[in-house]
Length: 156
Ligand code: FES
Ligand code: FES
Image 1 (cartoon, rainbow, N blue to C red):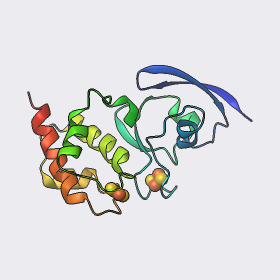
Image 2 (cartoon, rainbow, N blue to C red):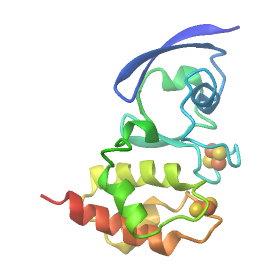
Image 3 (cartoon, helix red, strand yellow):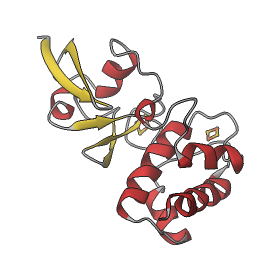
Image 4 (cartoon, rainbow, N blue to C red):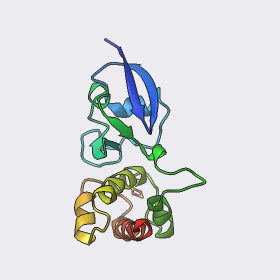
């Protein structure tokens, strides 16, 4: 049975009505109109649906609306704006770290969680953090370069 959930998304209060067991991704891309997180595999295998819950990466294709309601939710729409990109977003552009871009929102939010916890990751740390984010266009080498560029940009 549908219930009303009060969510905190990208720093704003949002209300959504839905089945408690509905994947968060469906609420984001449906009634909430946040289209950045993408449906890829639907089974925690590709990372295209990644969002942050209380700063930790979560697969929104699996986490339910009821589970997500307990946390602060951050989606790609909450990371920078078109006129004021987050350093990760500008670094992805400067390093040409995408082709079709389907995986990119998931990669950027996951990389943000990494840099928030480890501001100076080496290649191995970046690869480990992003190991569950697949890119069918083969951009991973450029993604690692972009994350390192953003880390430099964000360094005090
Ligand atoms: S769609 Fe969620 S991990 Fe692939
Ligand atoms: S840029 Fe196309 S899937 Fe990654």
